[in-house]
Image 1 (cartoon, rainbow, N blue to C red):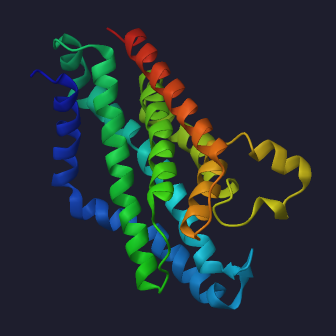
Image 2 (cartoon, rainbow, N blue to C red; image 1 turned 120 degrees about the vertical axis):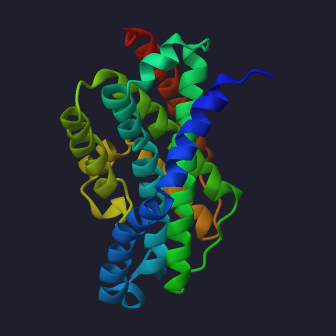
Length: 245
């Protein structure tokens, strides 16, 4: 059976395999620094919402990773467009825009899942063992789907790597630090909490933390992330169509 999306996906996975150990190091550095700084700096000496800070932090780092690594697929697409001109070959190939987007989005999700495994492994090294259940991974994957679809959309819009860096600085970085990954949103003013409720990472980190700590996440988070993921996928298909040469 002809599956063009699988060719797109496997291409990204082959590139990842060639860079795997470099990527593994890259996925580990920032979380390791966070764990060392916060783990030894506060860690077992501070409790938040009734749990040790490290237990609170690990799900937040996993949520942040699901966002940043899924969104990173946009950089790979940019390289393929601007330097290798692979995108033009995909345009000439007998595949639909939906199939192209599906392959790229799944590649982004796969990258995020692998990086999430690194976070969990590092947490175990620091003595943090939580409940990484279906609810945890469900929120992780849905969040990854949204940001991977968003990355494909923006990759079709930007004109250079400088534009891509602009997107990272003004979209991803603020959400990474303000989406409830490092501290409870309840510590912020009420007006700030209302604004941050519009961020998908806020709902992802909350659902993942609740699931990891043995609770039952709010089903609204999954509905919202699923709806946003579907909207991002549709948006990606439309932008790919507009990016035709």
